Image 1: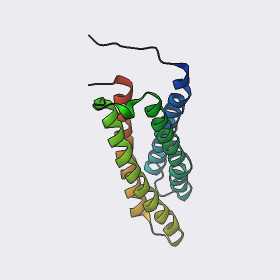
Image 2: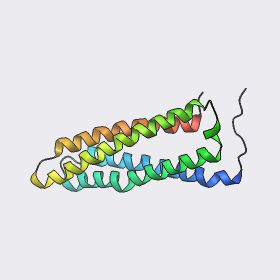
Image 3: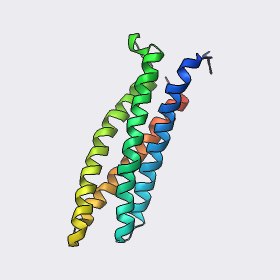
Length: 151
């Protein structure tokens, strides 16, 4: 039998809050980006909205999520544990590879938005859409792992 919930010290609440808030902002930004790019149908304003949402909402959300994650990780003393839980390893894997995919999506989207002035760039924005959908699926798996804590 395992413990479903434990009482944690009050000093852990703020770092955990920042981590969860950043994750919610990140997932919301990526979802908005993917939706705007998917439903743009060539509309330049919607394409720009999708990219700028990823840049202005998704990237700060990622940074806030990651800072909160490292803070709560050290507060709970998990950096001293030899065998950390599987859900933490999964979270790190998704966060690290997600950062790389997010940066690639931001670069390709930025170049695509820049090339929109010349009437080009739709292929790059389609790549950004595909990457944001992959990110969204990965982040939803991370949300499941962080909330369900499977072992």
